[in-house]
Picture 1: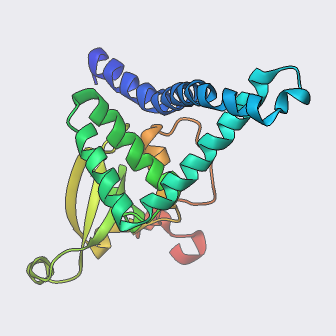
Picture 2: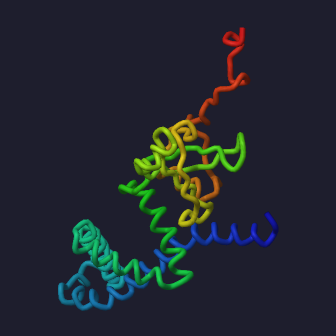
Picture 3: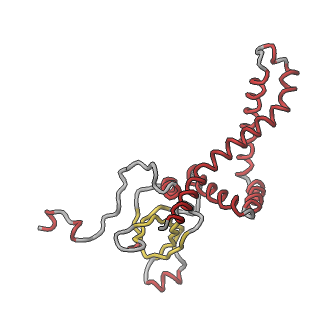
Length: 223
């Protein structure tokens, strides 16, 4: 990888990690300031100024409460068919903007995994790619059509090999069962590993699959 590609990859990784936090803080600040304008008269009318000299703090607390209630209401709506249709149209509009669409798609995909929503991904696997003894994280999306299985002479799985750090792009490969190595890793952690390029990951008990090779045999077995 040349210097230009390395800088670009690092920039995208940093952008994906920082953008959600910055956007969230900015939006919350805007919403609080906007809501305070409507809450201030309510605070005065309710006589809450008798309990505190700082009206601004009371107004901000009420504004935060209103925003939290609105978020819960939006979440409730999003779980219904009408809400899914509405937010789906919003997502399609966002995807028209070049840079915003890249960030939105990446953040949305990662967020879905982090909150453990149902996704099209069934499990995380390891695929020996691009050469022997080099592994790439894959996401199983299901079994291939019957025509593919008949051609291959057995079960074939659809495995998506996402790019890192931007998992919205990648390769779809069709692999037989013996080419797919199952590992003990959730989709949530697998997606986080891809997006962060492995930075800050703590070692867990999950290990690479044991391959059938003479080197993997124990001394007792070899004897």
